[in-house]
Amino acid sequence: MIHSFFIINNSGDVFMEKHWKSVINKSICDYFFEAQGKAVSPEDVPPVIPTPHHYLINIYRNQLYYLAVVTTEVPPLFVIEFLHRVVDTMEDYFNESTESSIKENYVIVYELLDEMLDNGFPLAVESNILKELIKPPNLLRTIAETVTGKSTSVSGSLPTGQLSNVPWRRTGVKYANNEAYFDVIEEIDAIIDKSGSTVFGEIQGYIDCLIKLSGMPDLTLSFMNPRLLDDVSFHPCVRFKRWESERVLSFVPPDGNFRLISYHIGSQNLVAIPVYIRHNISFREGGGGRFDITVGPKQTMGKTLEQVVIEVPFPKCVLNVTLTPTQGKYSFDPVGKVMTWDVGRIDPTKLPSLRGMISLQTGAAPPEANPPISIHFTISQMAVSGIKVNRLDMYGEKYKPFKGVKYVTKAGRFQVRT
Image 1 (cartoon, rainbow, N blue to C red):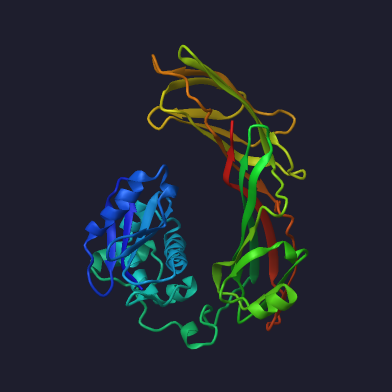
Image 2: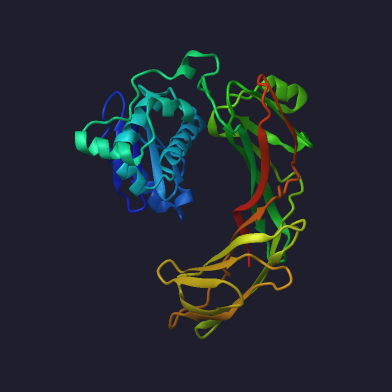
């Protein structure tokens, strides 16, 4: 399936490569660089790039491109999902998946790729199974490997879960404190027009879990309004027939962190927009302009807007901006022409605003269109779709675990046209 694997940074350096079957020269990445040069932003690079003899399938995460080379017809989403699983595994092992963390742990990354792909086909992709095969890095092990020159992270025995009918969970798990945490996270993708009306709005949601339960627990998670969920994808542990018939999640969970389900709530449902922006951006002949925006909460159901950040990509003819914020601080990148306003937490009784002047290059004509405004925000203890967990039951074990559910709403690709 996957013939070769490359990791590329924003500067265009291929700083890591891994091959199965035979070596493909990294000059194959020239096709990727050609497509990257035509893209407006890193996220706009086509996920599948055909070449005369190969297909290049890529994802972009944490300022890095992860590129898989395939030589035969395969379902592209299958490869994309695997690439995301590779990044998730590295984040689980190293707490982050950045260029520096990968370079510091080259040996472990290669060992992980060897276990995750067998001759180019996915083999072991569950984090708790991989951790039995390859131990996560720690300070003592790093010192020992430096002194001896040998890797001590590879286990000498097969993981016990591989031999059972529940391959995603290791056997013999024991915890002093039995806990199960569920994070219901929803991201709003929206486009708002000049008048404040919603042109497009949908929700991408997922439930991330942290399970620390002894033995082999069998969990059942039910919702108050499961019919809201559409286009749902499940972790392999979920019993699909039970979901189809009863709309409940029945599963034997993996040990540790994992994503239980992902779901989509489309624009056919009314998506509540929790934030609004009043804006007045104007350019005039003679090399100047006015900038005035105010941001505030709209439908937050009594919750507070936090971690609010506003980005405005100005046209290339803009030389500088001189602005005064009533809250937070702003910065302007003179090369990329992007203004970033870090607002922080919004108090509904005192709405933050940003006002000032725009300077254009001498002799430059004023832009024909105003720049769009991108918003990032977080709302704790709220799921904007209205989805709510009803109850969590456990079978198969006699102890009573501690259970917790947390709701978070975030901005995905949220844009206001001005």
